[in-house]
Length: 439
Image 1 (cartoon, rainbow, N blue to C red):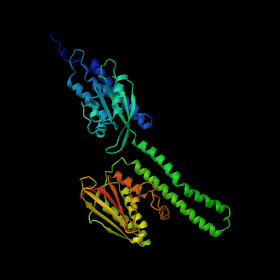
Image 2: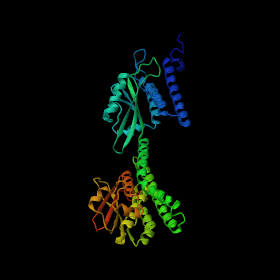
Image 3: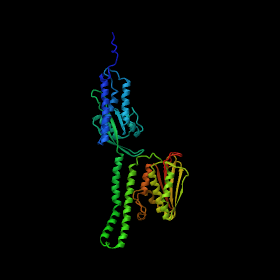
Image 4: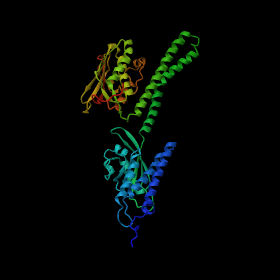
């Protein structure tokens, strides 16, 4: 008589394959918990724990390729289930992760990896998408030695970024499971850290150089007031006014250096918000009109009647507009007029998309041709004395250039001695009728 229970499959917890699968899943969940705890408590080297998780997940993915003891392959539902679990876990890792086999073919990759390497495809050679000799040689070295390795990977297009790539050998989470040789690549983004290091170095170098003169001046006046001019009321008032001016100059310099450093820190982050450039220009013209009247200058603005949307950071575009109009008022005041115009144009600077152009024209003494290529350099001044007398720090156009680089824009300067100067900013047009933030 047939046993009615003879045809039933063995209970999952008692089956060796089920036990191994349960152990793998349990280890994966345990690693996720460890990572969460480490992230919350601020432990260092959290990404090493992530590497452990990736190795376990890779074991789950690659173990699906092994054959059962009877010589047959595992059932498709089990393999698909493990693959889906691996994909789900990898999708929640914010940094790029790539698993490759012994032939350096891509086995699995998360969304961050596909975003980083546009040509990345499963079952294709990694070298098709990642053309870095250091990384590819590192993979072969890890496959041969079995020892983890760290290398650096940099990209320049579409924006400059630097990564530390941890290359680790794949190891089975369960000793008796045969796993095909392979490696896991974990990309740690160092872009912000490198920019911060550069920012600190530049700030120290620039500040120490530019602050030396005003500090020496202030110290000299203090010594004079403490000595020969101690009881001279007229000299005291005059010296205090000079000291106040030098202190304000140092403050402006530090503010501009910090602004430039912050802009450079975000240079690799393309703005995604849509703003109305026409409203920004209109606001800045109104803000600077009192300064222009004090200097006998009239600002004439020709702006479109409707909004002009562009993708950008509103505060940074305000800074661009402010620097250009304020410079035109200060250095072109002898012409008595500044023209500000905003228009839509077509293709520009080799790009076929529609653009908008903001031009600021003064009618002052103009700029000699030999100075034009260097105007956007830090601390470059055509006339050092005139610049300092007008409160300039030599950083205004450098700030403009860095902001426009982040916004995929361009700055063109045209000038002839005695004919004034024209500064033109070109930015990609976000399209008529596009959404705009309140400006």
